[in-house]
Every structure is written in C-alpha cells, then in structure tokens.
Image (cartoon, rainbow, N blue to C red; front, side, top):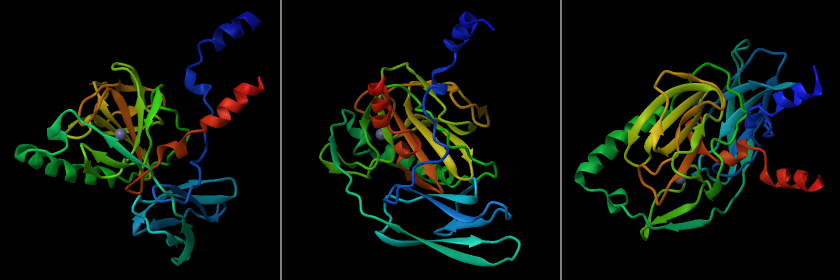
Length: 286
Ligand SMILES: [Zn+2]
C-alpha cells in the first residue's frame, strides 16, 4: 500500500478510534463511584456476585473474574460487602471493601419553566407513572457481557458534574445523577458503547430520552434530546448516532445529560472515560 493511500485511509477513521479507551472503569470507592473487585481466578467458572442483594456485572480480566459494582450516591461511609456464589461448590463467600468520604459541590440553577420544579397536579400524576417506569428500566439485567470502552457521547464543555447537590429555583432537589455536556442544539449524540435500546421516548424531567442496555446491569441514558434516531429493541454499535442535542424536559438550555447505571445505581460517568488531564499532558509533550 502506498503511503498516500494509507494517509488517505487514516483521515477517514472515525474520531472515536483516536480517543483513549478504558478496558474497565476507574476503581473509585466514593458514594456514586465504582468498585472493581477480583472475585475468583479466571481459570475457574464464572461466579455470581451480588451487592445489596442485586446481581452485579462480572467480566473476565487477565487473571481474575472482576465484579464491577456501582455504589449508590447514598452509600454509607465505611465497610461494604459483596456475596460471591460459586456455582460449582454451591458455596457463598464474602468480600469487603471500604467506601470513603467525598464532598460533592452544590450547584444553584434557575429553571425558567416553573412547572418543571414545582409541578402542577396533572404533571404530578405523570411524574408518578414515570417514576415506576424509570425504576423498572434501572433494574434491567441482561446476560450479555458488557464492554467498557466508552466514548464521550457528544463533543462539548462539561457544564455539570455528577453528584452536584442541586438547588433549583431556591428549592433543594435530588443530587445530579449524571454528567452534563453543553453543546448546541442539533449536534449528534452517539452511543457510548454497543448495546440494545430499552427505552426511547419523552419523559417529564428528562424530555426526549434514550436508555441503552450494555449488558449485566450496565446502562446508559441520554436526556433532553431534540430528536431521537433509534427505536426500542434496536441494537446499536459504539459511536452510532442515537439522537440530537436539545433542551426538552427540565433544563436551563441545550445540553446532553448523560447518566451511567450499574446494578441499579447511577454512578459517575467520568470514571468510564480516560482522564482529560492526561490528554492535555500528552499534547504538551508534542
Ligand atoms: Zn444533568
């Protein structure tokens, strides 16, 4: 192959191949963090692992089976435990880990649409219905092995970190369950990893939203879209366009709200992406 031809081909490699990818999320034992624990040697059969009675994601590492556990934002500081069930010996063993304190910051926002902060009666009924739907979606646990080579779903500035204690129009609300990326309306939103669409529709707070099941309780959610390009049941590849950035639902302006769930808990999405700082350093060296 000629050099010219190779260069020509390289120019057309999609941008996500040039982003550094992680094989596993970073182990970060904070509330809303992720615990990556070795639970059995990988030459032994795959064990079944539960945390707070909920099955967790299990993936094969080089030497061990690894449990990838999502820690709730409400996790107590101190000792936590997983149960490891050996399918051959039918025995259960336990493994401990320690959750450490982390101080999330406070963010104050003014939402122009008051009904999205203090909903009226009609909206309250809708919110109740959707609360149960979202609860059900979060419990999804499919058998397929998840992959963690996450890409950033949209290019843009980080405008709201995960875990921020939120005060909306001077009223205290739930902490921020995802990461906000500011981007202009209409910019393409990509699937962070391969998976199956388990929900695509309009909900009160999230607006137009897409849920992807990546397997073993690993889910991702993309909210406030102006347009949805996928349907429930559809299989998507990593980097496939699933919708466009918008400002539907409870927002101050156009942005993507991106959440990641593990074993039913919303966890910090930044733990699934290569650190930006390292990226800058690498650029500086050049
Ligand atoms: Zn958000």
